[in-house]
Length: 322
Image (cartoon, rainbow, N blue to C red):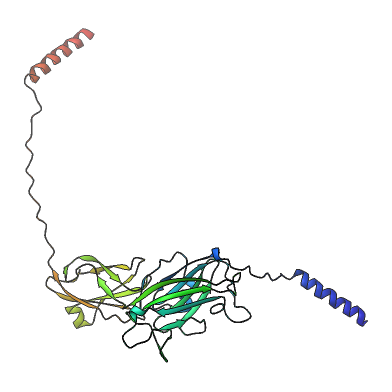
């Protein structure tokens, strides 16, 4: 009886093994599969994990990133295993990413800031796809090492970013790529002059910003009577890939010589920008009088005589028909 059960168990194990999918070891990443490394930006309101998941190879690279935003390091490399291996995680094992502050941006009597990215660190996340590895670093929360203490990225810093596909995932070589980016203050500035606006009209104003594409900016237009009543005209605009926004302000309810102020805000960002202006009376176009055209006669000399002769000939033809 035991022999029968043992044979049945062995047969069942063999059957399960036959139908179970085989685990295929990932092929080593070759040097040709490792491209360049770039840095792009994600809005401050985006978590590092969401920024890493949403990043794509079509995202434009940025040489400057606002200190409030998320820097997304993109290593163009295909074949890097997405899952964690037996010894640890992808980031810090098969792939390493580090930031080293450039000497030109280090302050006097200060040491350079450094960061070795790790997936279990606050403000850092990693995502590997078929053709790239993305490491998102929230510049406002990620912890850098400096001297014997810690620091965060600040406006004026610049960093050399080093990304390496290590021999844990390759054919025994370390493939390293580098790029550099600078950190700037988050800011919004109007390209157009907003100090004067036509009363009773709608105006489109353009603004430039250092904030990441996709950031939602909220503009508030407040006039004198709005301030007294606690009202504001609020407009939202999204930063495009060229770091620009177009904002449509309505001055329909404004009269000429009325003062107003414009402010802007964004989630997770301290801006504090305020602009002031005055409405002006819209220019009235004066239509020029158009002279009445003089009627021109189309008759030619002798036309009446010719018409009379034709009438007589026609009458004669009718008489002959009868």
